[in-house]
Image (cartoon, rainbow, N blue to C red; front, side, top):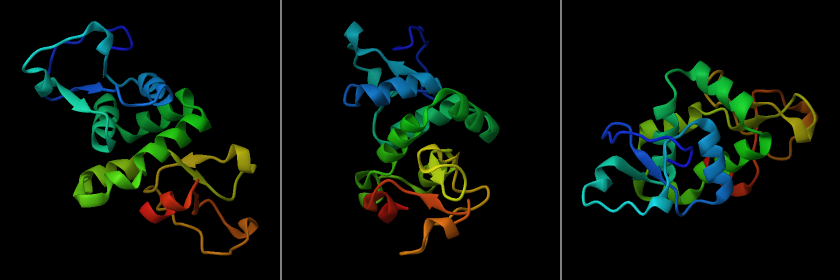
Amino acid sequence: SLSGHLYRPCREIKLLCVDKLSEKMQNLLVKIGCKILNSNYGIDHPDLFHYMCDADGVGVLKSIFDVFTSSDSIEQVFLQCLTAEERDELRHFLLDPKWYIGNFMDDSDILDCKRLPIYSMHGQGSTENLPYSNLLNPQKYLPPLDCPENLLSNEFVSSLSSTEEEVL
């Protein structure tokens, strides 16, 4: 793997093939603890696809949730290991509209996406140091249009782009 570990092939917990991901995304997935195939070894086997998943929205989510056993550990690792920029990068990747066209992500994948603490909240801290949360506990909302930021509480998420707002 990219982290330097040797893993036994397993159909339940697959290695993530990240050749098409940016270096930033690869590094943050390694920091989280995802099992990532190191393509530098040139492994070629006819059954390899049984033990790998693509680095698309669903594959990245499954790889992240293969690492964690509870929501508490997800929150703790994301808080300790990832910078705000890395959480924004992951959110931007997972909220890319191409993952939501044609039912590419099913309801359980969307729920998993909501469980990740990658959403910045309004109402606390400075704009460059907003706290992060998941969307479920407690439930978060998009802010109303043309509402002054000083009126928004931590029940409202802040998005980076209009595309992310459309997906949310």
